[in-house]
Length: 250
Length: 240
Image (cartoon, rainbow over all chains, first blue to last red; front, side, top):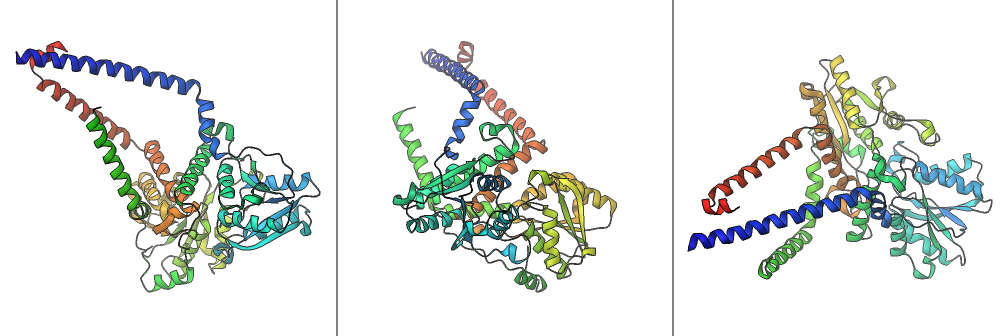
């Protein structure tokens, strides 16, 4: 009696398992087919939260981010040159960055000085470049400085230049820190990157890298919000003293 | 799935999520520390400053090693640069590194640009291999960012073979975040969290190890399955 019962159970289980196996395989095959056939719209949809929609509203000021130790990407510098050339009325806005260690040691010019020098070299008038006094270390600091500045200038609109992949993050930051009364006067202006095409980002290594980094940034923003991290205080002179004392292990 | 099993799974997942959230400073800082395999500095003939966004900080560390007598000369990676790509707005990375070295008092005669047109760390490793072959007694300290040292060490071991014994990998710190709370800054997040997919990519792209591990896992899975089948009673097997 028992063996028959066991064999019946086993038979049922095997049948179920087989059925489940075939169903899973068929579902996976169908999913793969859909993914392959419609990969372009699917991959575009994946990055859509990372790309701010184009906004054609006219702006009075264009801001280029200068808050990190890195100089602006070349796509943004080109975008800035195009904007400066496109309208004789347009003004450029910068938020003063925090003192740069690399600029101090001659590694590169300070970002805001670099942008101003570039604009002046392209015959852009100095009196149409304005700098908000601050000590910005991230774009969050810049985004927080703009609404305060805008409150004293009713009716003024500011366009924030951003590389298209990641411009959605910029927009999210502007909305997160911005004052609602002036938020609609800040527009994110996506600029197509040079190394890749944001509509076909998966076709180049640079595109994949840009999407990956923008996704990481979005996750970081979502979970931890505005950066409140320890400010690094690395000093090359102290490092040398540590080396001489045999204390530095790196 | 039965109700009891489903509830247990959900509770277990919730408990894991709570533990992970509660202990995130520990494992997230651990993730950055794991990437840093920089070694203790020892006297070498030259420092090799790798290219990258942090090239100026790496150059500062390289300059410190020369100024304190740990090395005699600096080799600067010749990174790919095309002026028409950036409208001549930015200068090549090696030029920026050379400027920092000069600013720190390193003589021009002590600086050499190694290789040219480097696009990846593998290209830089290939140039170092040529240098070590041409200088059979030379020892080199490779200076790169702390979060990049694990991948660099792996690449150097792959590329240099026995010459790797003459190399020491030295970490340079980041000036925009600290490893103990890297996840609180966008730059820290992109550098540290972005390093893991790169490590995986390099592992799959430049090594046979993952395929070996994959085959081994498949073999184990098949063995376990066939063992389980053998244990079933003969009647049960005949029904299948």
